[in-house]
Length: 291
Image (cartoon, rainbow, N blue to C red):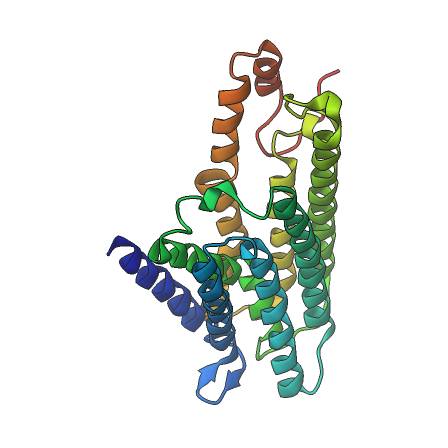
């Protein structure tokens, strides 16, 4: 019963956000195009949930998340192009940035899940309970909706604006975040592959600058997308400012940092070197390492 109630609440939040944030967007019939994209994001995850629940498998969970981002972005572009007659530069660039990001993240997560044997320990107890498993897939739909909100609302905006300073600043911020996250992930993968590092914590490269440089990059790149979207936001579409805020809260308060910190303390909590690393390395915002 708790799972059913949670499912209904999460779905209601997603749809209500779609109605509000999409109030100023292009209309498709009597519905806002953005609301329909929100529905699409949720439906994709529910459809893939069905065979996954039947097989009690989470193999395609993360990959479906990436596919949802890409699919909704492409659909938003098609609707915008049909309505306006073409895609303006802002929409085209924002869509390309989202596709590039989800292609990198999707491939990274796909390789990671198969390296783990095709299953994730997060779902060990959940996937055997269809109701709880459905909640996980519904939450993933909401994750896509809220994270990419600024991008999709900007693409589907009824009113257009010429590119200018916000576009340039946002693009630069996105590039910084994307490169930072990509390099951090690559460094961690290389560190783990080296047998000499077995049982050790990572404290090299960007991981000397921050204990979670990949999360800093993730938050930064979505902040860049929001900055690029600012000139076409009006009325309730300003709700999309939740995008980088949601990513920040998700990675620092709900999952991400909390889970990894607990695991790290369990493994290396008594290690003096790890204690020194904690004391001298910021949690999120990078700082040059002390000499």
